[in-house]
Amino acid sequence: MSEPVLVSTWHHGRGANEAGWPHLVSRSALDAVEEAVRTAEADPEVRSVGRGGYPDRLGRVTLDAVVMDHDYRCGAVAALEGFLHAVSVAREVMERTDHVLLAGAGAADFARSIGMQPERLLTAETMRLFEEKVRVRETAPANIENHDTIVSLGCDAQGRLAGACSTSGLMNRLHGRVGDSPIVGAGLYVDGEVGAAGATGHGELALRVAASALVIERMRGGLAVAAACESVIEHIRRRLRPGPDRQLALLAIDRDGRCGAAALLPGFSYALTRAGVHEMVEVDA
Ligand code: SD4
Image (cartoon, rainbow, N blue to C red):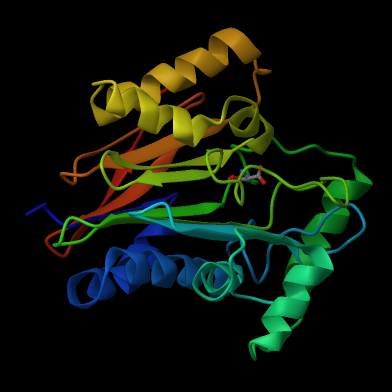
């Protein structure tokens, strides 16, 4: 038996874990991570996910999301417009189709076809903030006010692992830009024999090295969870030479429910829940 654990990125991970934990106990890791992520998607104060998420340079809110379970089952959507719960659309891609990733108008058609209700995601407050940023041509680094992507990773009492991730992507992105979050291996990776890992921050860094898959492969090679995250962050630092304002954080759990994280820059935190007790963990860089 494994020790059940649920981890979710950033401060809003706390509310996500509070919502997800009962599902971890009574249902499954997969249900728990989906519920955790839905909570962040519905929160208009979370500016990089779902409702209230920052739009792209054309003023359009486009969502990326992925789910992956113990046995390499996965589903994802990229550049989805007009549906709040991108993570649930991603899960339905996994449950109902033979595909892994649906993008753009096709993803929205699919969501509509399974009865999901379209809605407006751009709030007046997000639009005001967005106009302020674009007017001054500010490119906000992923760590300061542009950092809310949620990744949730869970291990249930049966020892089954799952992960989910949802984002509206980086502020000021080009229309059509897809980040790491919906890409299996980059924004999320789960192998039930090893662990689950996810990324938040500047997605291009995670895409270029398949960061989440690399964490899992290093764990498979014998590194402990935190050491695996740190070694991939070090690899990114050495080989990609990211600029000083580029944040990327990696979070992982193993099949025994141990967790760890590492980040390029200070400021990353995650919510950790074990035995129903919630705490926040600040990660040094
Ligand atoms: C992206 N990785 O689209 C996402 C953004 C993010 O915390 O994680 N922000 O690049």
